[in-house]
Amino acid sequence: MIDIDIHHPVIKALAALLLLILWRRWAPVSYWYLFVFPRKAVWLRWSWRHVASGCGLTKKRQRWWFTTIPGLVASTGVVRVKRRFQRVAVDTKPWMGLPKPTRNGFRITFHLLDGQVPDDYAKVCERLAHAWRIEAVRVVGSRPGRVTLQGITQDPLTHVAPAVPPTEPAGGWSADDLLRPIVGVLETGAAWRMDFRLIPHWINAGATQSGKSNLLNALIVGLSPQPVAMVGFDLKGGVELSVYGPRLSALATTREQCLDLLADLITVMGSRMLACRRHGVRDIWQLPDTLRPIPVVILIDELAELFLTADKAEKDQVTRTATALLRIAQLGRAFGIHLLLSGQRIGSDLGPGVTALRAQIGGRVCHRVNDPETAVMTLGDLDPDALVAARSIAPEMPGVAVITGSDGRWYRARSGYVSTEAAEQAAHTFADLTPSWAQVAASGLGHELPGSGNPELAA
Image (cartoon, rainbow, N blue to C red; front, top):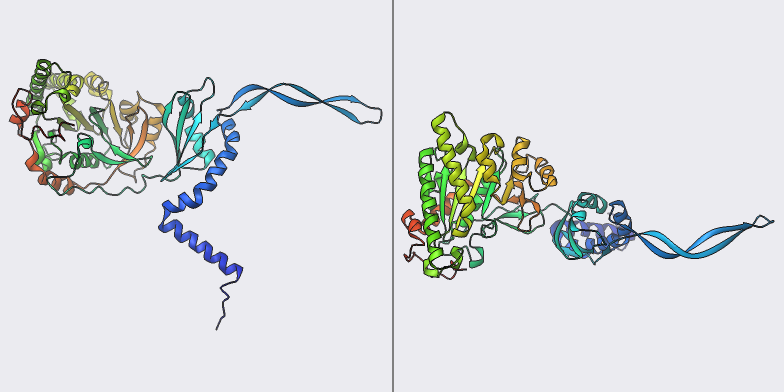
């Protein structure tokens, strides 16, 4: 029988190592906060001068300094050394605040040197990530003379928990969530909200199996418990959006139906415009509670199908469709009409109508795409670095996309997995909240709406 001395130094070291391994595996958050981050913070502060110099963030400044200059050489061969107090040029690093830990990394605020702007730091984020040996670095905030960076030590998009559809017909949302559904996670670890109140229209581009349809499922699940009307355009015969039929106030599956439905939506927008003018307000959110119209979210699947032409007759239909969509994109925000345009292919070859429409869309979501032009059409007018990030999305990570944030910057994000069955279940669960088209068309004309006066809807 082998006698093991548990007090032996080697045994103690192995036990401590095993404890650290188990701690890191089963409680990674506390392991990061208590064990890893303190060492990381000290190393960040100690190495900042060298990192700033290597990334080009230092500035030359004149400083008074004692310098050593050689003097005369004595006959004995000894060199006389003189010290002189003079001004010399030295590298000055930006002042670094104390790093603050987060679940997936840390945040640091820097004081900008004269002549620096936050974009100078945004351009070297990749260099800083390599210098700090972390996953990524992003600019997450700025104010006069300050910029805040967030370091991401591990990619939170690798494992995103599946979204859980609400099952209670009376719950699932609050006043702050109206038209702000959570659909996934940002690379910073924060929740990804598609905020239609702040960014009224969105483009959702992506190839097959890239996660484009999953984002639509997550959006259906997020909007279904809310008092909003959803309208569908599906020129694939309705096979994509018909499963959400119980929660859709209208669904168009042919080009003729799309034109009729767009004409009806423009009529609704005009009536809401008159209601706002009658009450002396600029948008529907300033109307009295009993007169506030029902917000409408237009879901368009495969945008390219609306703009493809085969003969002269279809060309006229496409022109009318493009004009109607452009009018809604330009005027719809103030009157509670929002767009979500989805498609595998969004390119300038679809015609000038697509280019003009894109200019009115502030929200961009670009999943993995098959051609560079779709990425350029979706993100090209925002930031060249966003194009590089979009083209580097791996096929084995569906749902990952490059998006625009409410702060005007771009982020990597991933939608939580929502199966078509789960979205269909949510549509059936909240089918009683679906307003009829008559209720949508009558809103804003002085008729009291079902559920009007609801303080949550008035938020």
